[in-house]
View (cartoon, rainbow, N blue to C red):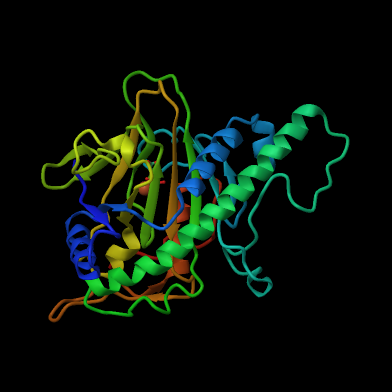
Length: 339
Ligand SMILES: O=C(O)CCC(=O)C(=O)O
Ligand SMILES: [Fe+2]
């Protein structure tokens, strides 16, 4: 499947808006080219991920994912497709460093790292001391990538408001934002035939910016028209044979919350990652989300009825996590439902 390319350097802002609108009304996927995240930042994020995930599990588990959805999640913990086996991927959630006043609120907290800043290294053997260095490099790389992504998304989100004909609509909705960065590693697995490395799902939130290791395959989008799975031609899109020249394009897609917010005008489309288990694959998903207190109510066109009940982003997202993460229980199951 060829995704439309939106080159933010080469196009005028009205061309960008028109392309974003068309992509969002079609299946919500497009490729973003010439974003502002530095190439060196992307490279280091990738290098540090490789080193971190190669560490023995005993070290990675010291940063195990907590109830605020930060930290390391081992293989098979997540089950995005409820009808399939767990996903053959490991990941690490990094969020906004919250302020002290927010700390008792759901999903708010500090990031979980290993080694934690406050922990003094003592009596460590060589293996542990090497692992610590990698843990620190991982943290620095992720913090840098996170910061540049937030900056880029802050600047890009107004385009969606323009595309909806409501300039400025999102201005106060992301204050503060709740972006989550999730570097992922899909390991080699023993499998017969294809395995769902990341089960079929649509993303939960507003906007996802996905970086995928150049040359790796596996991402598929469900095409409603033909009712079939279409492979995404990573980075290549409209230009045959040019995949490897554009390693830093992002694959962007909008999530369920954007579909909800636009009363189904913008589409959140089901996708998955399939693998034959013979190669490792790295990617990094960045989910750019509004403030938890933000009230979400469908934007309706004239004469249209709202298809969803008003909710807040917090209620909405807790219900999603409950359904897909075995380790997660918010106590708010089914807080947001379709009417
Ligand atoms: O790793 C990928 O290519 C896709 C990941 C994804 O869809 C997700 O994390 O939501
Ligand atoms: Fe996804």
